[in-house]
Figure 1 (cartoon, one colour):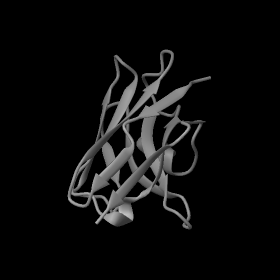
Figure 2 (cartoon, one colour):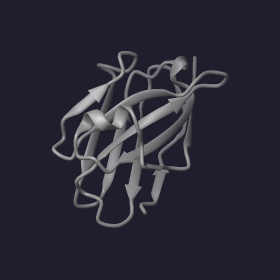
Figure 3 (cartoon, rainbow, N blue to C red):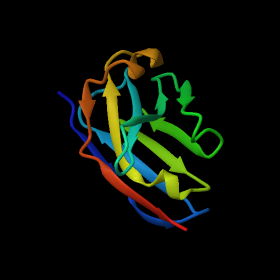
Figure 4 (cartoon, helix red, strand yellow):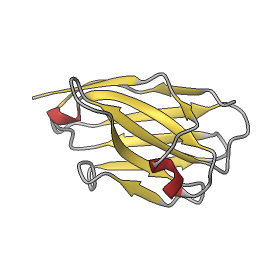
Length: 122
């Protein structure tokens, strides 16, 4: 099974930027990678996903501000977060679905990272 290690979380001011990384161990190339987040006191929500052919999908709340990318040789996905808002404050989880089709990510996830906290202040 895969192990996912996240990094890059921290504190930022509104309007600033942060980039999260998610490294997957092993030879996990043909799979969907993406991010969920859970704001304090709220339900977990989808953020972004990227298929192995680098097709992408974003939640409306982050569209135009966040960019997801991947390096298949490194088994790493990235989430570049720009124009951050206080409502982006959440625990961000990297996730993987072994299905190469991006649609599979929304219904199930095979592996989860430990989560990394992002805090955005005004």
